[in-house]
Amino acid sequence: MFYLLKLFIQMKILFNKDDLNEALYNVKNLGFVPTMGSLHKGHISLIKKSKKICNKTIVSIFINPTQFNNKADFFRYPRNFKKDIKILKKLNVNFVFKPNKEQVYTSKKTKKIKLLKSQKILCAKYRKGHFEGVIEVMERLTKIIKPTKIFMGEKDFQQLYLVKKYIEKKYDSKVIPCKTIRDNNSIALSSRNLNLKKSQLIKAAKLTKELINFKKNLKIKKEIVKNIYQKKKELSQKYKVKIEYLELRNKINLGKSNNINNSNLFFAYYVNNIRLIDNI
Ligand code: AMP
Image (cartoon, rainbow, N blue to C red; front, side, top):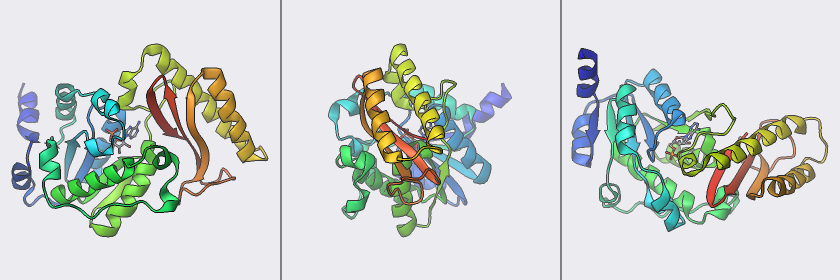
């Protein structure tokens, strides 16, 4: 009972910038975990990492409209605030920031964000304006929260790469990469998985497992690019899914790679109309 009471008293839920400024006054070594809610074990691993190496941890829950290049996708995005709060209380998080759109976007305009031509690859090629929206909201949240460290998942590798590059150049905050968490079927945990039926989840898991094995075997294969091209075709037909891209890229600069050292296989695909991404 006392324990529960303690958790309840400790976690502060903040809905606006004034309350946030007051709560964060004098907080040193603050860890920040930005999320769009519908929390799962992937998010939880980021939070645990922050709690381990920072004095205090703040988690934001904000479904950022400007990063959705498709309105239907924005409205369909799962929302589970009550459940999220229960999870965060259990984790003994110090602060939750749950702003509305005005709280984030009414302050001064930030400099217009433009990706370089060389960065318009993978998701940036297919989701016009998506990363510009992600970088803008990350810049706005960083200005408001002023965290020492920001924890982001490798599941969204290109997002992590672009945000890290942008934020660390302009602000004192350091972006900390965190490993992808998968379920027992190998599929990367994602809030979007909540929109999949069981049969669709099984399909996604089978496809992921095949790609994990395929990558293992790439070590001994020649003509890697041709092999990947063929695998993409084969899997699209076998599982009747649209694979938007399947590419081997270097983890350091996301350049195209024909060598599996330091490289990951990046893929995006649609199960029905739900878009999933992963890298292995
Ligand atoms: P989201 O709520 O989907 O915007 O994700 C918030 C943060 O959690 C991002 O930094 C994601 O990369 C990270 N994340 C999402 N899924 C996973 C996962 N399965 N493993 C690790 N991190 C994840």
